[in-house]
Length: 497
Figure 1: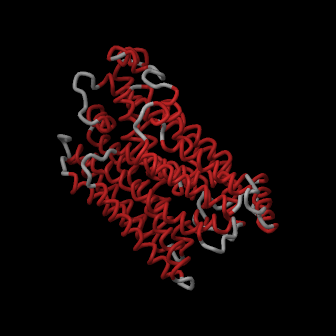
Figure 2: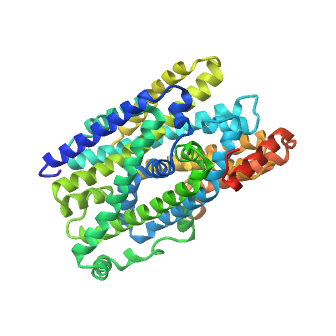
């Protein structure tokens, strides 16, 4: 617990009030469901890129990843390497094609909506199955953020876990409930800047405190030379598992929805440059924070490795600066939970309620259902987060794998293989999601192959099923093929047709 709490409390209060004000402003600009779940496709490059990064990384970037490096050394950096590669590929190849395709495919505003329109699925099966899987895995993902919030408030203010969970949840639910996508994107833009600065400042100050780069590396090596080895303790399967995290990028609805929301194709090159730079530099900062922490806290090891970032803020900085840096952790948590709640609520409103229950529901009714969905998913996530043994990294790992294996292969095949069919899409989603569930429940934990990260297994299985079932089905209609080519032309030319 921090000794001088007043500056930190003031910083937190000012920050939270600012986020709620943005939520209220966005509330006045939200008239229909497209506004609520996609911001009416009017985000600029900077907001789209930074909000994508902020909603992507969450508390995992400031707590989970530095904690993994602090606990195990540089070998855990393979996660960051895999994620950086995945993020670059996502921005370079997926962003433009998805932005174009969701527009020409009947102006799709959610991922399930896109799948239904992309394959002209009159049965609604793609929409329903994808919405169910989104709700399952996002509930766990949201819980990871709430656990991160609990760690922050426990470490900083000495709160008990239950109180900490509710304090953070009330604010996040508040502005997501009110403002929807615009509130989430605007606040994520601010939070993305704050997270970036925090992850750059802390390693630099810590290195200077040691006397430079050389003395810092020597201090880490003196604790254990293996700390600076990329391969110590990780065989081939271990490296593949860690790098396999990068495969998850293609199937994260809360990230790729930002690609869909950019106001024009001409904005994408700028958004791509900002987005890639943010991800690579931020993850480098997170890796260095955890690695330097090994030496910095060698005499008094931390009880919880995931508090290494928090510990640095308290020992290196004045309480006012520490308050700003700790607000960055809260920003990371809020920026991801709000996006996940929004995607979950859109699945309930657009894909269940409108798609299956009331097809003639008006826009105000759908926005209300979306807002109630935010509350429902948040309550279930809060219940899951009550488990005292939950860690940020474990919950994120499971949810990331589930979403990545369920939707990642299908997103790629939908965008780049014209021969993909409705049956292939359905088989790919189900096989990917079920493989992750079965692998974690019954197979993971053994030696060799059975220690492989469930995302890698599920991703490969899903790809195989998509190809087999697509080739076993009749070719897509000419109309579907024409739409595919139209999206391809828009993407290649970075134009709006």
